[in-house]
Image (cartoon, rainbow, N blue to C red; front, top):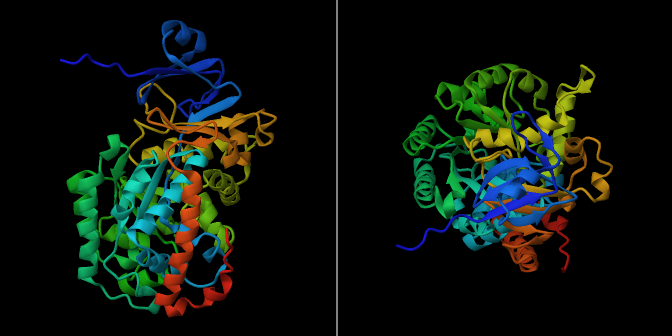
Length: 472
């Protein structure tokens, strides 16, 4: 028999450690021992150095180490829309997001998804939760970047290409294609790439999923033991369509069909009523809040965040569309949540920065059923780590480190990123992507896709005059 190879040991020393553990400890004078893909110990540096003299040393002086950020809801392919629909009127979801996804080839989706992953890495993210369509056509490109992924085929049985024309007819054949792709994706990808890639079951939204589709998705999730996700009350159009077709709100419709539950994460909640919030809280549904993307287009996100927090809802934060910058999401999210319930209590403003950081670490991990693996720096957890450079103007002076990270952190402060104990970004250099080549290719793909989408969808002619392409 070949000799057994023990996992490599590495010792991270000199850093300020933001654990996000149950006590929310921020540690100095401690070290992190890595054994293979997991954290073996967090203990005083001198103790670990003495006990593991052969461990490879990673000198992290001047850095903060925190759990890798978890983006609880994003669509990496939609980087193809960056800098366009944020500033236009009309239905962004069915007017542009749906058409562009069908316009793109699998290779083009792969390029734009890889661009999203690249931005995520540079933004300190280690895990992406990405529900979309035709996911299997670009999943390998995402996995090749080294990130941890939760992927899902965002299913519907009302043709999302026709909704912008007011056509909400149920289409079982259209829905069957989604279910077939979802089943095939789960069989091929769940647990793949050393278990870095897992799957969820996704209903696109209440306005494009019939009761029959929701039942089939519940069955699919039960058969494979998967968590679930859905967009919820994300637009006035959705609210009106569900009211017209189902006679109630989106949340009440999903509850009537048995779709709400503690294994469900619902994104947005933009137009949820107080009654909806009480119902969602009672069912244990997690909110995936995407404060930056919605606020960027509509002004301050109008979700009833004070009621949501007061109801005890677990909130995870994501980026949603056109960006993977989690620092921006945290900063804007902090402002919005304080606006929703920002009165001073016991001398402080709520929510505090640790609550916001929890929303992109431990709470986001819990929303995936993955709290035992990711979301904090503790022995036994995956070695998914983000290294922040404290010797940058944005991070100095350091009085309250977590506050600095939440309010003033930005992608330029990220020095290194590690997933499963492997660096995907080290000392400012991305190791898993040919960055210059990808940037060039993404520019070319985007121009090609936009020109084709406008040609194929004449009713999208308005943007034609607003695309002054730069030769880069």
